Image 1 (cartoon, rainbow, N blue to C red):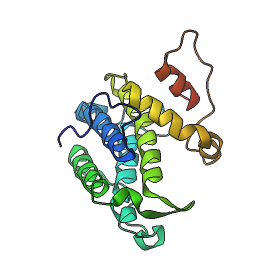
Image 2 (image 1 turned 30 degrees about the horizontal axis):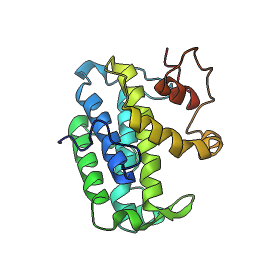
Image 3 (image 1 turned 45 degrees about the vertical axis):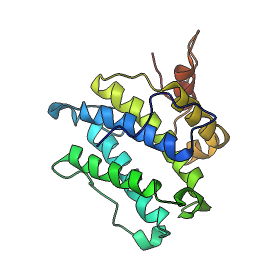
Length: 201
């Protein structure tokens, strides 16, 4: 899988599709850094080890092609539940991410309507929310395996602005933990992580 994102996209110019590609690229780099003996390492998501975390993100990306194609959750059914990594988790990630990127780059994809559990919505809004979640989990994975935890500044800003209006909804659904105290002199990444319940220090 190639590098889909640009290292520093200008916030005003970056589309939802570009930010999604950038988020996927960041997660990809951390997946490639997972050592064979790290798949059962604990992550900041206390209920998930590294394998479960990667499986979660693979699941999110696996949903993108059918939803952008107009399928409903009921039509997809149980196709994307359970273990999606198999015996070659990195290969499973490569396939899922490549398929999701390809679906997002189809002409007119971002103007389509997607049928979500929360109701119908715009595809670009849906992809922005996925990008924000992948950004959070990129840090989770990096922390779990001892990889580079620094996130792209523009991507952090994009994820924060995407999530800010929906924080309580996400918390109520169990997707985010309570906000943590902001450390003195916190930078934008630390402020973002604190907002979504991560202790960066």
